[in-house]
Length: 227
Ligand code: CA
Image (cartoon, rainbow, N blue to C red; front, side, top):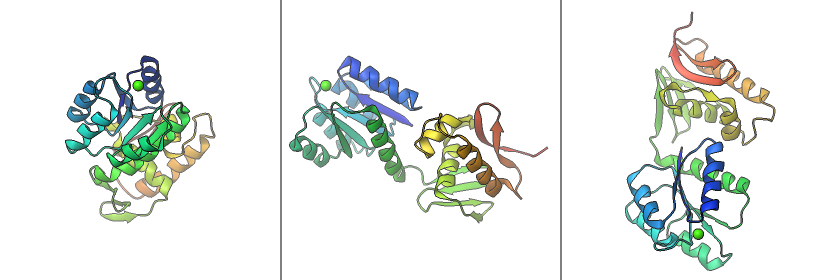
């Protein structure tokens, strides 16, 4: 998931970039509205975090430019002024949510995750690897054309596994934060149990096997014939 942060205050921008990077997002930081517009309209982002008070092109100009060029990714704007006017204006211009500065990072992270979940309907609707298909729009999973019933958590877990590029290992910490909104320090046994259940539904009775444990690291989804 790629996020663009547009924030001119150096400390605030660095802090946001660091926090979001630690939360496993890919983050680009633009320090001016002009750079923000350029990046938002030439690169592919899943979400934009936009400070309203920017020198030169302000946040409203940036938002207008993004929407004016047909980009539909969610935009979360940050406003220092706790004024109703600002919120209304931002939402009217096509922003999806806002936070009033100063905000708690945990609050920002929660909003970001909610927006990203909501924004997914405009992405490719079906994720595939080997003979498994996950239909995001209809929330349906099939393997070899056979319907597989999953719980909401299992679905989210499988979606996360299918979204890993080049069959990268999915760390348990990322599963914890994305599927359960919890820290890695929490009871990770929950994750292992959920993966075991998912694996039973996805892999039992099928070849090749798709979900594999990478000891000490996490899980990976790729086609492997069982030994
Ligand atoms: Ca600012």
